[in-house]
Length: 46
Image (cartoon, rainbow, N blue to C red):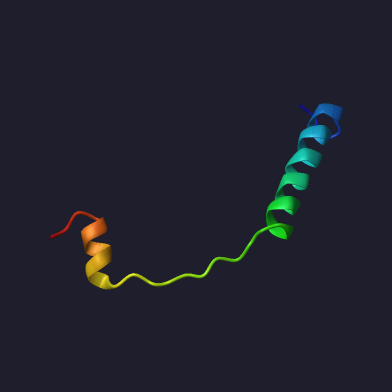
């Protein structure tokens, strides 16, 4: 496939549209860091 191929351009445009939507419409989330003990439990260390 060549970069000037119309099918490639369609896919690139759709990808850029999706990326733009993800960035612009993203709702920020409140985060709360995990304590070390919680991380170890998630990883299976007891």
